[in-house]
Length: 203
Image (cartoon, rainbow, N blue to C red; front, side):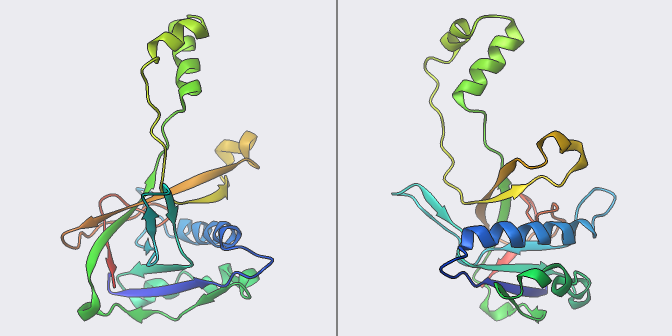
């Protein structure tokens, strides 16, 4: 990853960063989808320089900055972010493509999608249906089950997939996790710019 564009959200009293992330990331996802290959992967990876998790409060924060990485400056220009973010011009600052400052890289990171597990109620209902037993019987299978909460920050999005027409207006949460890698790992990214295998540089 040799080049990047940095986006900075500009929230105000009437428009929160949470709301802006939803709008900006929806547009980025559409832009990314235009560049998918046969495996439905893209050459763009994202990072969140202000990402952090408060372990005491069990809360995650994305901050207000995002970087979009690619191997060439031309790839970033082909995203045409000025077109996709045109309606949000007052709420997001977008830089021109820049070279990654190799001498300032502190580490490499994976930003990946976290898939929430089923809730206890969902597990009980699933078990009852699968085994054709009552809910009370199914609850006995999970009497010692402890739910694992998700601390990672998320962006609220709406499905744009025709396959999910019945849920088209139902928002869903894109939970974003982060892990640190010892070295750079090349690879492709999903259509949200996230990957468990490919890394992006941190600086």
